Length: 152
Image (cartoon, rainbow, N blue to C red; front, side):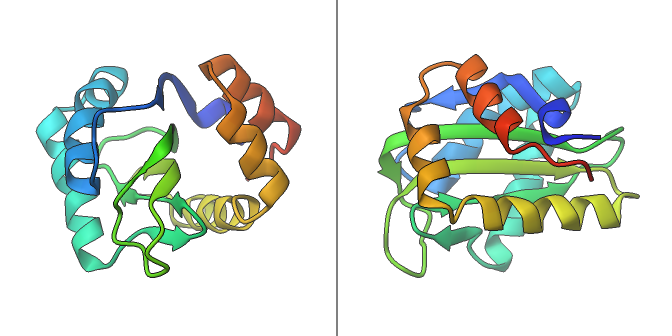
């Protein structure tokens, strides 16, 4: 399976109203729930539980919230571009502009960890980040991801 196959195109967000990570999770949960056929409260709760363990902001204006979602059939990737930034309580104190949510099935450890590692490396590339920040449509995001797609 490749990254683009995991991207939920109906869940690529631009310029949400959220100004912090908690309101971000609340704002995106309904769309994720609709795309995945899960209750929005469950998705929001699981993302928040993971976030309480420690921020998923990895610095340099990037966050990769992630969790396991019972009953999910395969890894799902969600993208949010927030040019004004969201407070994710990043250790470097920078507001987050690029957010990749990774949701994984309970029983997929290796692919889940590989995707997390790959995304964190990829998002530290300034050229890639600039291209993502310039995107205005889900199709543009998918095209950028397809250029660096990875089989996991």
